[in-house]
Image (cartoon, rainbow, N blue to C red; front, side, top):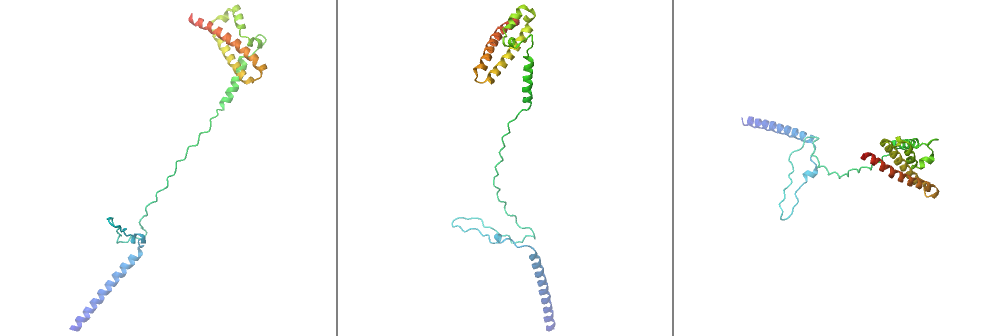
Length: 199
């Protein structure tokens, strides 16, 4: 009887040992499949400083599932300066070239001379007043305003001619004389146009 109890106890002990060994082997095989925590986390200890109570770093007692490591804190990115805007290239209006050429051709047409209106007539605007004394239609207000516009435009052309004449007195002298005559004629004609408006 005592022998049966001993053998039965031995069998139970062997079964329990076998079950424990199987459970331990199963636990180790699942634990080995997970990667270990980084040693930096395992070795982390709070610094010992006298007189200051600091929080201690707690190392987790569990293992992370395979492939899930704790994310390292992102390093701050260096500040990238904003790109500076390039200065805009100067705008060049191509239409102004055509306009300048068109203005010159219009001026040539407007100040065109012929057999009845010569270059000498163009240079002497005071002739208009002597002709207006004989031709009544030139004394109408609209004719006087048109003539004043013509005188102002030609005076402007003479100013440009003087700028491009350069320092040569031979080129500048005739232009200056014509400018003086036109200034006098413009002043005289403006008075007549003003009187026409007052009536």
